[in-house]
Length: 412
Image (cartoon, rainbow, N blue to C red; front, side, top):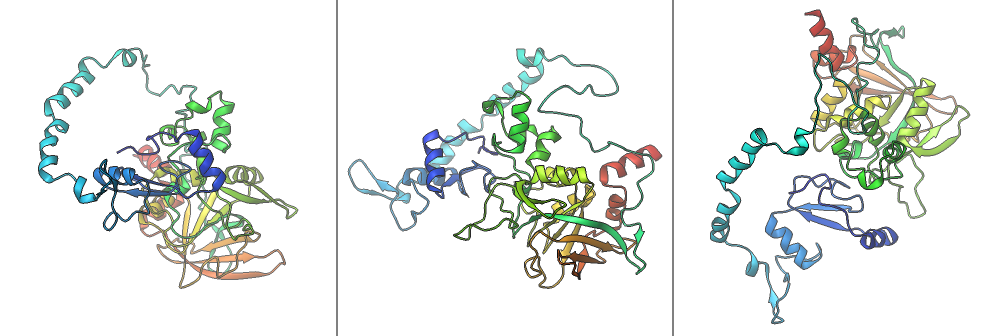
């Protein structure tokens, strides 16, 4: 029932063999998530199953065995052993349940939390006061979401009139990612292990954290410096902006092409490119396919997107909660209409992007995507604004739900 890679690493020999031969290896587990790279960065396929079926596949040694028509293996007598031969009966399970559901043991153990929490807990020294004393830690840090906060909301993001009844929401943006269908929140903000060569890994090494102590993104979610470096850093995510290899495959691992002022393209991590664009004062956007943000409703998938300076996500469709989370972080979700996609538009990542919206930001109103090519050409594509409710309009105008709520509290 482990989650977020807490089942542990594979042996170095197995990791090396998978990498050298580019093997597609699978995990079969009784946990609650099976996203790419969630269980282990080198495991490309993860299947959820009941505990007995996990054991059966471990005995079989391969997920290619059809346990309904093929034996699990051979017994000591050399005879085939079938799944039905070893599957526990309901009576067998019932007889063992009393050992796993001992109410007295639960009460005794949880009672110690209050009466005798242990020496480690007692050694923790707390502080008193109205504000939290932020420690120097790679696990927790003061978040930047209220930096530059003012009592009045900033000028509306869509306040610049174009003279055509529309307003400019985003101007001169660079494309930082071109993604396909079913980009999950695990792709956007992984929860598993941290590679030492990744931006987050480099950051931890610079802070004196050794690789065995990296832990996971999930356990460091209180530190925005780690989490924003982990945004779009899943080892399995493919940015289709990158040139395919000779066999048509795309490089994995959260990379992009940073476009300089001279038009040059330099491959680097998405985090590194985002920091360069932010230093230039240039907004960025992401394009994607169907079901963008599917999977677990991880808030860091939207938080990290905002911290990278990404102002809009344009997709064929959105997962319900992630779309709402994007608005809540002040990121504009926009949806293609009809059969239009970034592929049908022939986008390569070289283009500059403008986005014009309805000045009132009416929920699900029409917006315009202006694509400006390197040859000076310009074309316009209609989009649907996926700010779906009036309260979401307020969130977006305030720069997100956090400053909105704080201003409401202060006003009261």
